[in-house]
Length: 255
Image (cartoon, rainbow, N blue to C red; front, side):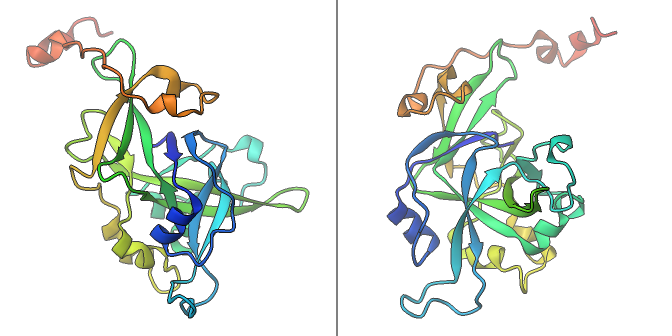
């Protein structure tokens, strides 16, 4: 899954990476973005033609609340916060089906955080970032809820997929990464059905990310400075005797 991420790039870098004519939303480095907070999403614009001045695609940036609420929800207080959507089943789920068809987005990020739990008495946090140090685009979905007072609330979720072989030792899920040559196809909800872009919902290749062990400072949403990304020496992984003997020991103590 993806429960925390970071966006450190400035507006100019985001404009260049996503080929935006202009980013009208003010951005500041954010080291510890958490659910329910506003996140930046890139969507296809209303027009079909590129920006003639700079020969750019028609793309727009918007701020949404991280935690998707489908448009049909009557009372948000009775609905869970959908920060992630499983890419394998999103097109089949009522919560995501309309967004998969009509409101696919890109989520600018500098990386994400994940916690390795297996074999540890305390989870080890990792800052997972692109090895090339550049921005990355997660596959996202957005929807707009009409609130009881008549206001509109834009919300969004990040799509996840099964982890690649390299990352699986940390967690079995990871965000879906959309590569730059595929931006246009992913965002094109006019002519591209969910089945047409299903091939993009794959784990990124091994070697794309590097996982940096970091301290437990990232666990607290209130910690928002660069110190949460400083490398630490990870605690050693403890061995599971039940697994070492082929799992036979795991038969004991169950009941």
